[in-house]
Image (cartoon, rainbow, N blue to C red; front, side, top):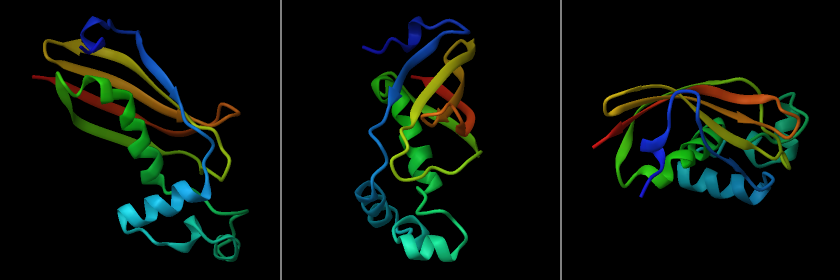
Length: 133
């Protein structure tokens, strides 16, 4: 049973700290998503593009952020998901996923969501609307 229904505005969902970003994570994501842009998997190509090294797919980070609600899919679903990409995620970055309940109206929960790296820099911020069945 989900604890989401017990949250009050200002409360947070249990944060998730991901393992360090690995090349294998990004290669697997490229295959699953069909996004084979080499800046995500090949150092030389990322450097040719002016980057210090390969970067994670923005959608890889966004997809991981949805894990914050995995324990609640038995009682509802993400109805709306809006994010803003704020900074790049690099190999070996450790990303922490966080969500805070902003507002609760009957069967609709409005969350502020963020992903931050190991130095506290936001890589993604946004909002999730979670609808309870």
